[in-house]
Amino acid sequence: MSAVRAVLADDEPLLRDALAAALADAWPALEVVAACADGDAALEAIRRERPDVAFLDIRMPGRSGLQVASEASADGGEAPLWVFVTAYDEHALDAFDREAVDYLLKPLDADRLARTVERLRARLHDRAAAPAGAAPVLDADTLRRLVEFAGARPAGPEPLRWLRASLRDEVRLIPIDEVVAFEAADKYLRVLTRDGEALIRMPLKEVLERLPADEFWQIHRGTVVRAREIARTTRTLTGKLVVHLRSRPERFEVSRPFAHQFRAD
Image 1 (cartoon, one colour):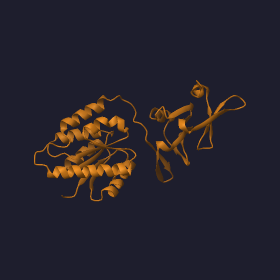
Image 2: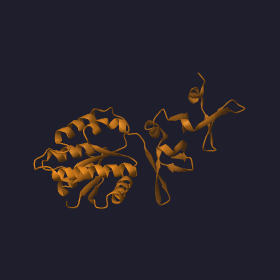
Image 3: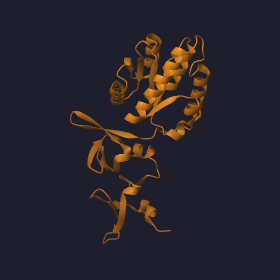
Image 4: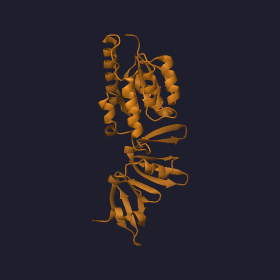
């Protein structure tokens, strides 16, 4: 079989580059013929390059990844094998699994990517061995129904799975799973992890809207902590409630509107 060709699309340059680098390690023979920053450019590249595989972010400016796949499949001819990249958890993607669509969660996991590569190789082998005119792995009608499914989902902000923090001339990706607390600091948001901290330009209100409420508690107008990181609470001489963390020395004051979270039943 000739070299396998792929198109990548993600509006986050750091994640797009990370996917290209991860694929170079996991699938050295794969040739990335286009790396696009939005859905419209991805559709143009797919129509121009006719790749074997396309890795598409679900949410992008212009067309979504699903819309790109749906329109490209409706063009006729042999469509690429589609892999969708998303920040949604696996439970929200049950429908995609039932339709045999592969997907990758952000931030990328090397083991999960390796399984995706093996799955794609197997499908490409089956496609090469299939008789001419055989049904595609994912036809246009299935993709249309997936687009409708995605559009019917309740609107809401995409959940946070990582944060992008700038440090001098470097950009650091911080997985949300490593975050212990957030603290508002002037125009920045201080992000505390077990072994360090960083500043990001993102309003605490926006972060709160995208955090799982059962994992993070707001304890003050400018402070949010991970619930399982709370070791104990104490009271000051003036009666103020103070939170002590398990893995950080900082102590955070609890303001009255949020004190009910610490009351015993």
